[in-house]
Length: 361
Image (cartoon, rainbow, N blue to C red; front, top):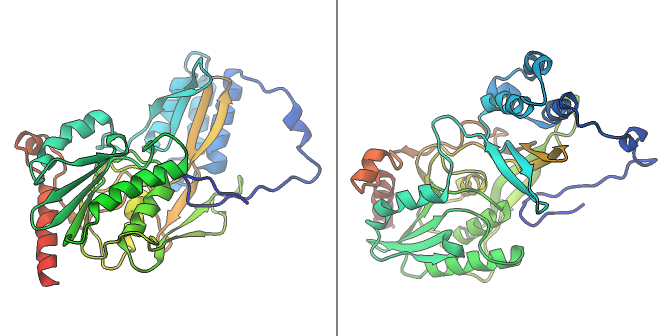
């Protein structure tokens, strides 16, 4: 049993009795049809959402496999996964330095990827409502600001790449930003993950721990574990948000801003905050709708596939994969009209709600 630092779950390694099957020692073909079959099998054995996405994977194989050539192999793979609209599906190509570069990633229709360019474009209307420039942390991926009426503002644009070093260095930088935010005068907090590229679920839970004074269930994780049975999953692993020990915490009113550019760990953070008491009001748009850790599968010496094989369950046993987590209050989010007018309806609504709630306390 072991746990990877960025993940909130554990994994069990079981040694096969008698060692590897003999077929594992045979040479691997990299002919186009062999690569196609490895790709198709990887999804058939691991992907949990074919029914939810309305995709007949066997029909896809029957339609595409007879037409596969060396020239159209990659385009065929992309054409088959595109209808899934799942941004946790990615294709990566090997680079000369021994690494990989992503060259394809899907997105849910009507949403845009959380790029640095998007983040830069949407900052002006937010900045127009802050009472002073943001304090920036984590290589600019976290911003701490103040809003009128003693409200705090926390922008989290990713849950990764905060600092050089391992997980402890990332945690220390996140803690530094949270400490700057959580001052005694706060009457409410706006957390903005509308442009969040994801990263470490463990960091997301760590941040949630600064906003509670009692433990609660964030979600339960399950993973497919039978290649022949798409309904078979591992036992659920509960993930709990526990109050941060020895650190400042805020248990008052919180508003959480989300959009279709809230992806992956930005969504697991949103799901973790959903179980908090008092309720965190979500404002904006549905999140992207992808939660699972990425499962890597090498298709050929130069082609790597990432796909999801997990579900993050609500207390009711459902998931938000696909449509994403909906807001409590739906508002425009960074539309061209709002950007042109330096208007931010979601942030304005969050301020209104928090000011009213703080006034009742």
